[in-house]
Length: 364
Ligand code: HEC
Figure (spheres, rainbow, N blue to C red):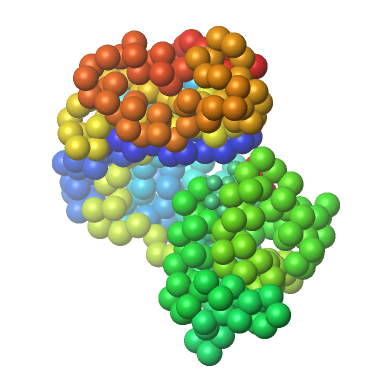
């Protein structure tokens, strides 16, 4: 199974492959506590313990920059705190422990083939532990206006747009309109950079500071900008004042502990929106273990219609490669086995480890 994730400016995209079944047998044996841990020449394995004893259901992460792109593999400890990271390419790895109720352990350097026992670090406070919770635990702290506030009464009323007829419609927008592009509870979102300042003014300023400002203004306007900004500002102000999520995530249990996650970075932080595809959702067997095709969003000048003469589009025309290209067109190209067409179309090919830049002209 493979999934890909969209990332935005300043963040290299990551290709994530999750495998459950491949390593299930040996690790299930581990879960039952029967067999001894065998660490092969390409594996890393050992036990994780803290001052509280063995730590079960925590992640052990091995990460290296020795390969052509950054590479990481992670697994979960069993009931006795044991882990086994299988099939690591040769290289020097930083290895550490992350888990709910912990803070990240010190990174230890190691190479495949070693037995490596690790020391986990219990979180010194509830606030320190919460830093590792999934963003949703933070985003769920946002207050939802009461049912009596709907339908909205607009700018001269309660600030909620009269478009929004019900509380459910507000919740739907809060959940889906913004998060179709990015999460909202993650650290960068729930913390307002101090340059913008607190409160509504800070939120208005920060959502207007980047290239995606129109899309964000659209979403906020649809909800009623006054009420939406107030709502978001109230949320981040409470977080800044120290409020913590009311829910606590559980550590992985049972079969969830058999998961092996492999991640490769593709692209570089200098690119803006990008997207990747590894197969066709209608036929996920297609292109198994094959290359991953990637699309870069054209630079802003092109998005504004100031195309270069060789880009195939006339000035004023909509940019030819946007989300449709990463979705339908690239799927079709991959589907029909036209790898070169897909590469030409998408501009760049990331081949799990090797990145071939075909179309630097997109950089303007
Ligand atoms: C079309 C995609 C898209 C949508 C929809 C969208 N955003 Fe964004 N958002 C971005 C991008 C891209 C950035 C990075 C800055 C930029 O390029 O504008 C960003 C940045 C932000 C930031 C600034 C983070 C920082 O670094 O301080 C906030 C806050 C934010 N978005 C909130 C929202 C909210 C709230 C909504 C829904 C009303 C929303 N966004 C909808 C794409 C989107």
